[in-house]
Length: 476
Image 1 (cartoon, rainbow, N blue to C red):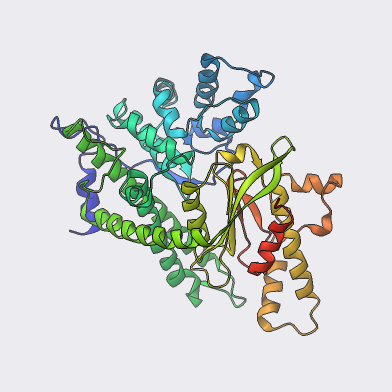
Image 2 (spheres, rainbow, N blue to C red):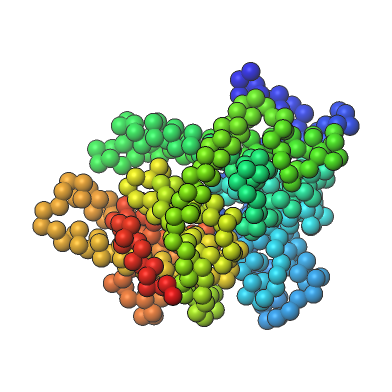
């Protein structure tokens, strides 16, 4: 059976009332668009007019205005804040997380948990606004897909599936970096299964882009830049694999629903490696688990060799705070940082250098869990890395006889649009807080993902020793 036939068979019973008591409430993958930048602000009124609910991104702050002067909150007021953003059409927790963190309120509700806890508010919006579609962010994580799945169920079925409570609980743990499973049980867990799908299809997407776009001379102009056709092809491939990944995860959720309906004692929080899946998806999951297991074994060796220390940074109020730091090296820096979160205290900055031999991705990555981004400010570290990078670039520009590759690199930088390393940096420069001569505006190393990730420019010139020296100025 082909992948298309497998998916068609899996979808034929989705979104309709079950034919038997053992089918559960299936949810079909339609009207789902993983096309928004994570952390991007949307116009909720326009989205609602188009029959769209936005989830796990959107940056809606108006729901906080009535509470900005309060220092303590009743449970009812906490609920009102979450429900207010839902009524606005944006089911997103990130701004609320930052708000509550600054107020000392311990409330952790990812977007999937929000849909479960406030399903009546979501359902009311679906009915009142005629919601037919869901938009979430690209490079979707488990929360983006889980919340989309739950909203889609309310759109099609008017109720949540029986796995909703457990799905919300598992997703909430994962999204706040509190899923502390050891490698083997993690690989076979729901979070590990979703991660396996994401990793495998990510590899397939990179291979397809390399072959059909970046490695295809027909897609480039005489200067090596992508043509309009090349950009269109790139976007089509990205969209294909974005939707395939999310659709596969929907199929996993539906299989869990079927298993849970057939056996109420089935535990979706535990080992789900025996779950029945369509053949093509089962193959992706199996291969992904094998790769993830190998990655975890490789990671444990790299993590053991990594330096563990203390460093001083700022909190979100500008105060000095001491945090843990792990400084390691790996050819897969983003995988290293994500796995390190499972083995470190929450107040830990994880830094990983990859260099020229990296398998893919950035020259280096430095991360904290999304939850800690509400407390830890990594902008000073980001600036220090850019300053070190600028010194390297200035030295390259001053060379009397640069190589052809170096000339091409310089031309590449100069041909790019100006970009802030992080939001608000230009204001700091204008006020004199940050010297303009320390800042890179072309292809900078950026602080992204809500302040939780410093991602190096892929043309970064910093060697591993240069990278480590930057941390020496922050270490205790």
